[in-house]
Length: 117
Image 1 (tube, rainbow, N blue to C red):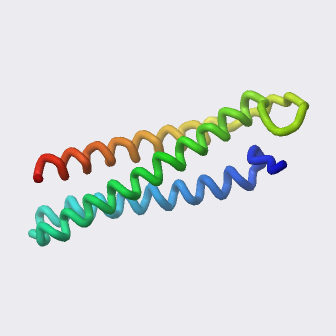
Image 2: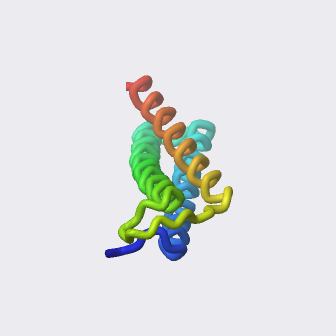
């Protein structure tokens, strides 16, 4: 049985979520700067669709990270021993930041895509 509550999973998941978060912010910043630099409409739509895709992946990954975080704190794992572990507060803040920023940019991007037709 694979134990996902070890530190290696959290390190890998944090690196992937950080990469996705910066990628999402970079793509959305490109979209915002493209409005002022008069990018083509097709380029703007492509950037919005890319931000929607990356934000969906980020939110799904953040939910999986949150579930593993919850299960590691509650002591539910593959073993019969119920050992409560203390998780640092920064992991919760990072989870909430990733989840909220991904969902916020997703809704903003989808709203702009629907609004512009």
